[in-house]
Length: 258
Length: 226
Ligand SMILES: Nc1ncnc2c1ncn2[C@@H]1O[C@H](COP(=O)(O)OP(=O)(O)O)[C@@H](O)[C@H]1O
Ligand SMILES: [Mg+2]
Image (cartoon, rainbow over all chains, first blue to last red; front, side):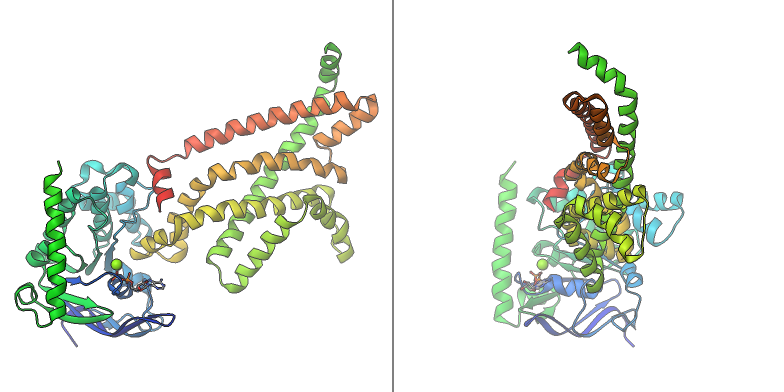
């Protein structure tokens, strides 16, 4: 059918009388990193949540590996094991240690034996550089560390695709780098990623494709070079200009603060 | 004073028998109420419309009427419907149902505080709704509920006094019979008050221990924020 891992066709979401987005088409190819940008309230988070069925789309279809996961009676829990998600506010399980946060999906969902699950979870923690924090509770970790545990928790399920919803926007500037570093490494290892972020440095360096969304529409998409240097739409140019300005300022502030 | 001391020690064995019945009723009511309250609050938060209605109806009914009325309806009222229960079973049912309604409310607050976010996080790794409730929501909600819930054991302990009205031989019933026997209601009720106080003190100590033992580093802070 297609060589895309994850694909949305004519996806529409309506809350009450509020059309959040309409007829969105989006294809994510294997190993690709796509960055979605756009003003807040545009429906980016809602779109991500629809992609792994946390929110039901009102219309349209979603395909994972060519199979329609929006088909009635499709096993949603099965789907979500294969589409990892990282949240803006981390959403770690606060009553569990870092290790148990990563392990719980392995023991309770994948039903791995405990020892095997522990080994795998430790590996994932190592992958995000937190092996030495395994027995810390979320409340004892910094925001950046919590988010890296969040990434490890999703990775532990060996997902086909990872969704990131503004993974660094709740972080203090000095903690953003460690999370972006982990994501960059993932992208280099050819993990398939769909990332909502306003970190333009990351978008430019890491994204294969950038999608600019506004008011529930995809205004423009293309390579970072295309969007940064040859945008087709004035809106894209304006938005990128504004966001780069903002981002640059934040970066400077972060540099200025000890 | 020494008179009272003599009075107290003379009736102590009898009073302690009553007290152990009181403690038994409290423990049973608390346990039954916990199960009922948990079921009611989970149904209310996660059930379908019909069952949600049932849960709300139960909670409102038992919080909105006096325990004594509930007890009399069960003990004297149900036989009218062809259901006759023993005194002990009636007392157990009334206390359990009543406490369950309150415990449901204590739990509900903390389930709301844990919120949809933890549900979303659980579902995002492929856990089912009920698995997430069991492994993620409840362990946090129960811990968060402890400070507010701590009122319930003490409050229930004191409420058990009403069951002497259907002649259950608990502490209040003992007080009444000792008062009648000795013509000393004051001494008798002071003695009972002392024993209630001692039991409440004991319960409080146990609850404090529970609160400490279930604490998770950094959790209270995080839980409140979410
Ligand atoms: N559960 C919901 N119920 C009603 N409206 C919602 C809900 N979630 C999001 N919205 C609305 O959908 C729009 C898009 O929100 P969101 O997807 O969070 O945008 P973004 O992530 O781009 O900032 C907003 O107007 C928001 O108010
Ligand atoms: Mg958002």
